[in-house]
Length: 90
Image (cartoon, rainbow, N blue to C red):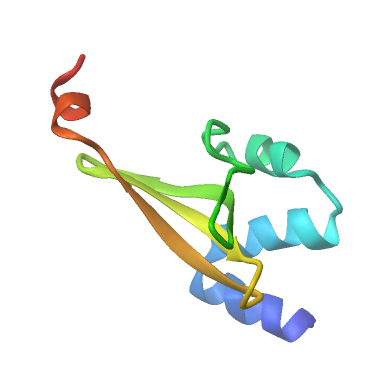
């Protein structure tokens, strides 16, 4: 397990930290979001078989979240695309 986490750290340090805090550190989704400075608005939401774990990134067109697929027991990225109204709002 340590080897897999070390490989993930080399590939994606932020994801590795999230997994370490959430599953090995026993932190809640909210605590993990706080430690990783992620937006808590969607953290913990469930969409179909996905549970949103953390915000991976934010850009001009939207946000990318790390989600756990509870049906397939894997992780996935979910993209939230801003609407034109959201982009133009200030």
